[in-house]
Length: 182
Ligand SMILES: Nc1ncnc2c1ncn2[C@@H]1O[C@H](COP(=O)(O)OP(=O)(O)OP(=O)(O)O)[C@@H](O)[C@H]1O
Ligand SMILES: [Mg+2]
Image 1 (spheres, rainbow, N blue to C red):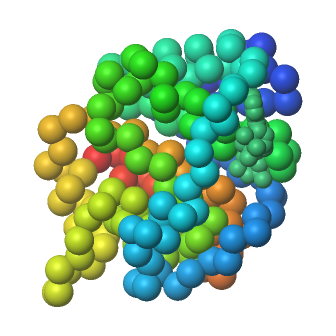
Image 2 (image 1 turned 180 degrees about the horizontal axis):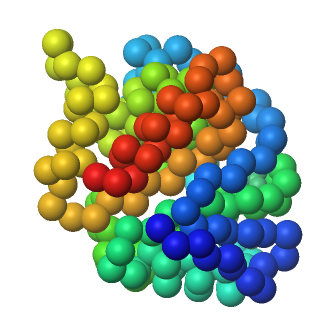
Image 3 (image 1 turned 90 degrees about the vertical axis):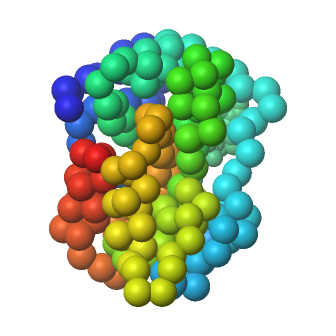
């Protein structure tokens, strides 16, 4: 992971290599992990704005980062309502990004998760995976990512909710580190 500061963006920063979070609040109620369904994910996923204005430079830089050969890790920072989610949704509908990641682009609305365990379930549901008896969500994700033939793009939106939630921040860091490395 290389540090990468994005220039030319108003009130925005995208950096690579580290998660920086803000303290945005949301109206969504966090769920407890195992009860999470695919429907919950879809109901918490916003649509990209029909008309997206500006942010050309930062979009271009983010797309370039995502198209590079090595895995890219980007963090979008900004105050509440500045357009972080809209920018992320705009970036993932870019034709070159879609061409590279195809049907492996997943939006994870983290604001419905209170901790790392719950976030694991949210990611599992976002990917449309099933957890069979005797397996944990973590194992299912591990297997899926390890066997993946194509690059996968995960957007962890509102990561600050589990980060400021009820559980261990270390567990969240470990989760992100372990899965970003697969
Ligand atoms: N560049 C843009 N062009 C058009 N509409 C935009 C743009 N950026 C944001 N919006 C709109 O502004 C509103 C707020 O944006 P958004 O939800 O992305 O902000 P946010 O930073 O993710 O907020 P929060 O911190 O609450 O999660 C949304 O309705 C979004 O569609
Ligand atoms: Mg948002």
